[in-house]
Image (cartoon, rainbow, N blue to C red; front, side):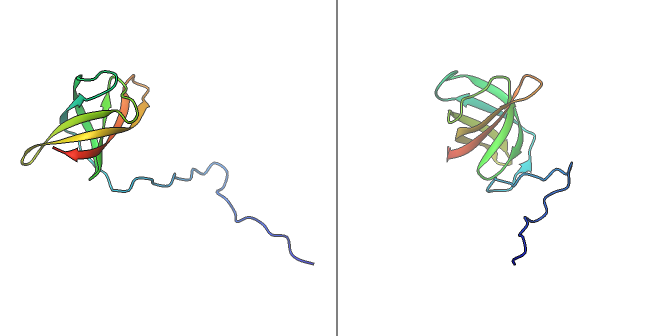
Amino acid sequence: MSQPTSDPPGPAAGVVVPERERRRENRRPLQSKATLTVLDGPGASGVHEIMTRDLSLSGVSFLLRESLAFSQNCRIDMPNGNGASSHVCEVVRSRPLSNGRFEMAVQFRKKL
C-alpha cells in the first residue's frame, strides 16, 4: 500500500507572503521635478508639472491629479547632472490613491 502524498506546507495563517517582483530592472528612489506633456488621447497637449517618485533604466513613476490611459503616449522632461533628459514614454500603470491622486508609471520608448 502506498503512502498518501501531501502538499508542501504553506505559510502559516496570518503570514503575508511577498508578491514576486515583476520588474525587470532595479528602481531607485528619485524625488525630482519634471514636466510631463501628453502626446495623444484624452488630454492631448496637456502639460503637467510632476514630482517623480522612483526611476529605473526603463521608466519612471510619479503622482498625477488626473489619470492617463494605459498605453497613452507622453513626453517627460527631467533635469539631470548634464542639463535635462527627455523621453517619449508609454503609460504602463495608473492606480488611484486614497488622496485623490493617481500613481502613474511610464516606460521609456525613445530618448529625445
